[in-house]
Image (cartoon, rainbow, N blue to C red; front, top):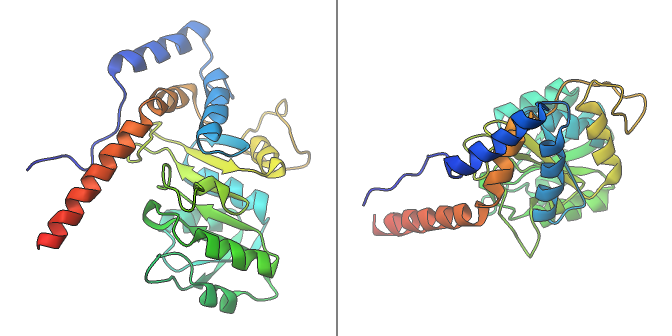
Length: 262
């Protein structure tokens, strides 16, 4: 049997062309245009969260989410955190203290997490490892007990659920990737899903260096906005997302059967 496991998920070219034609008709290519604003709403609705903020990349997204949740200082993260996310946290002024992961769920081990927390700890960064939200509720419970804010690197977790909850519904919010390798791609991009209005307002300000879009005063700002073309790709793809998720599940079942045979 021959099947592809690493191809990009792309909507039909005719749908993409129609979406891009609208961009050229409007002449609105960047700076929080109508496609970006629509993606913020539509993807947040899909994820069952109150707020969504599109950004230029997943690394920019983690920088902005970390800044909104913690500021600068010491946080605890799993030793398995990806190199890219670690660099994003460092760029945001965060010092990472490592905790171990549970060998079953691959999420933060609750006992190791508690042991890594000190008086200097400002928050916790957990990871939806391999795109699975398994174990997220345990991290959430420990964070609540310790009175610490919790955010998630959910780069590959779009479409995953545990106990009826998706990646943006745990903790203070999650960063999702819309890179071309992901089940829903915008060619390049990231998306912050959160139920916190304050975090959403903070990121909407810091992703945009234009003073005209200020939701929280006094914040350091950068150019982290998503382009209209990237938002258009994601919006068109959102109409096909459930089918793409089913395709991934079929591939996973083939892998599992093959591993069982071997």
